[in-house]
Image (tube, rainbow, N blue to C red; front, side):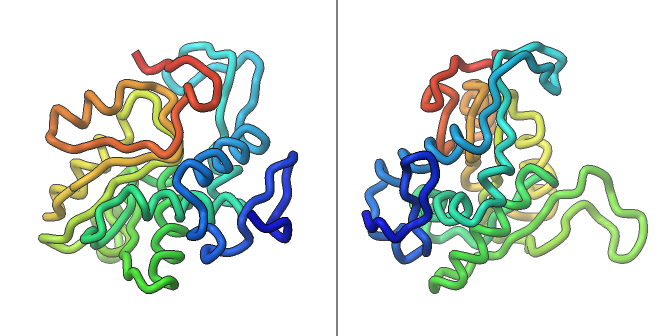
Length: 208
């Protein structure tokens, strides 16, 4: 890997998507883990959304909104999602930086990809509805998230996309910290493919 890339904590990250495309899957994942560990993982005593306490917390947007992180996430995401997918999105705000940067980088590299955001509540003015962006009846979409624990947000987005007429062909996430999402979405016939897991970061799953 070229030493001209973006450096952080000893890891050298690709500066462009073209550089990232030259790396093997394992190299990209190793770099994403390194980026998350340095920029997004916090260790201490935290209260999670579920009310549980945890010895670690991940602010995945610190990676999803960083230039090097965006390249790594998009490069890995485009290797795991099916080639015939039309769009990517999920529940705002967790999914937004992942979906938007992946779609933008994909489209710029010759792989057109729509993006969309699922509102947490129905918009009561303008065009209304819960979807901002592009989801058309019959389109094949991937539902994503920055970090997932129990899968509540993921399934909410799946249901909204399906109600809009889309076919949800995969669920993915930057980080699976819970370990239970695969079983939950699997009950609905949807595969779950995370880019990184809690175990990759050195922690136990906490989604049970």
